[in-house]
Image (tube, rainbow, N blue to C red; front, side):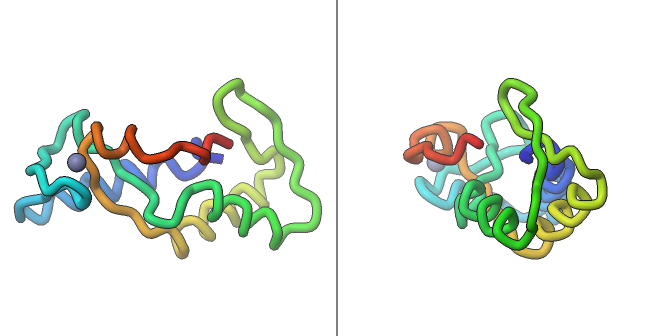
Length: 107
Ligand SMILES: [Zn+2]
């Protein structure tokens, strides 16, 4: 399900740095740059958002790609894309802070 919304994450990061202001990690306050050290994080955890969406649908078929699950139905996948766009609250963190959150949101 992450794959479907990955362009939204990329777009968020791009827009953030295009504004030209100084971007800092929202946890440690370190300055961030448009590079791989800047991670985009879901404030409301991704798994919570994904599960909320799953509850709104009757019968979601998914298939595993090994590290992600893909919604097989294209119409539902599009709805998930829109749902995520509407509900996700994103923020920038440094790689250290992002990877040191407690991770329970691997779908
Ligand atoms: Zn940080």
